[in-house]
Length: 359
Image 1: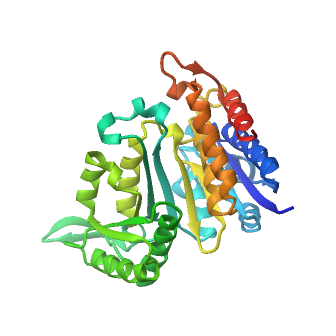
Image 2: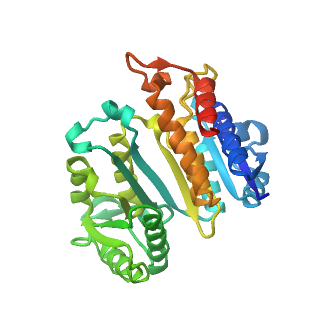
């Protein structure tokens, strides 16, 4: 029997609660589809600071590197806000991404039919189905370029540099095309090539990489137009690939189409198949320990892990089907509850999805 090694980083706030429910669902599908899971838990974020004095202990890095995939709950909280930047929980998250060489962030924006009313968009805009994947470059561009303070014409000024190498664009483009191949074979590359030289290079490289993926329909779009089209006609998109800063903005915009941050999974990928999977919401310390956190984003992150790192596509689909079924049955955690539905807590939602996935 094939056995996978999974590192769990429950983290802070509601992280341990939602991670536990995701593990419950993963165990259910592993039994159903005949593969094993070996878990090892490690420290990251605030809990790591409390126990070791740093947000990312070296033991955590070693454990993650020895695993097939990493599942993260959430990091951060008010308790650690007074610490300097390099010692805050979020530094641990950036550190583990860097240590694992993760340069691509995959953010799905999907509307489950029972939650359509939560979307800010009209039904006629959403249509019967909406499922977009944003592939964002994660370690280059303006966030990592040269920056500083200077003077211009005797006035104080500041600058940040957008810089991409051919290799950086090639590798994120390949992730974009490979992601599109697993979906509907449509890829939209988003840039600002009418103004920015870095975007002109981006477009040139993406066009060249496209020659290796003749089955994928490639289009190009300026970022300002893409921002408009996402709310005007989002159904035209399937997979989007774009730079760090554009992806930061567009993935947040696309995610709001779904109507609930508690439903949104993500994956960070690099060379090879190992990835880091996490919900996009925060640690929510105000509701930690109350048993009301929504575990569905973490559970859906497990589905992404099964698809992109473990190559267990059938198990991934079983989880997505289970989430859909539970929502169709009317069950809701407080964040997505509406009158006429059935309010449940974190553990009960995990049980419902696990039981459905095991059928």
